[in-house]
Image (cartoon, rainbow, N blue to C red; front, side, top):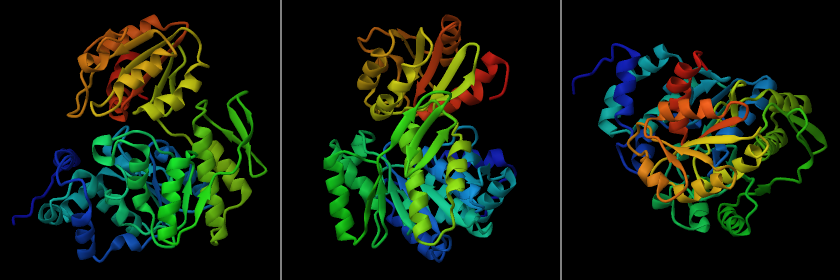
Length: 418
């Protein structure tokens, strides 16, 4: 095989992203490929984070706590929001173009011979980067499901499953118990599972799988004294936690990270109370109830399924009226339910499209709902900005859509980089 040399980062990213749907849903081939490399994923202590919603935010909150405690922390998350590099970070700093390009050339023959998908390439690079940079901890966010996800090659100190909702049903099953079973596939022998999931049916699945693996099941404690004055504050394990967000759903995600930090403390990781409080207060996660403009007030939120929209609704109701929404989603989502949920909050809803092979169309989204159809996302957002002056504009749906809006559309319309 002739060794390809990528001359620049654009060439490598184009090559990698063209492999987005290569391979298959299942990770046996990737597990074997990593075995051929000597299983480098076992060299660094790690935590594995899955769930339907909140896993990216939970990863970021735990990263911030560990970083505040003085540790060097690698994070692997997806999809990217700004540039491909933001999937792989150390202490919240993206992997550089030069480093990505170096790995692209180093592993090209390996990628081709093992027919790796884009996500598997990213995971391979994340593992390699974290090892070579000697991070203290790596935090791996599950991409899709759990049992068959490429991240499931790791053996963590702790497994986390945030919550369970309906998503990717064509691959994971059409009941919450079936989906919970797929997510529970990340549970390993004698590795405790922490979950924020309250539903009894899902918990029974977790309990059964944990028993089979001799793994402890840890649930969240009671969250107390919620305050929404000047940001969000709540009480947990005797500490008062302040968050730099107005998104109510982040309370549970941050509490999950708090609980994970307590577990790590129990197994000998030095994390004091101040690191927990400061870490949670400082953490910010772009694209999750992110305020990107004051005049007009514009909020971006990647609520990419009905479970995410349900969590988002309570925060949206607190925004200044009138509230306008621009929405787009992938075609494999429960978009009817999502649009119905948004119409419970506001009658001012515009559906639009974006350029992605799994994206839905305005016709499929709108159906017979009382919504406005504007195919061009830039035009949809431009109109919504004009109409929402004095009120609020929420741009929500697929994280791929939010990424395009954040990178391209809003900088053009607002005249500034976000």
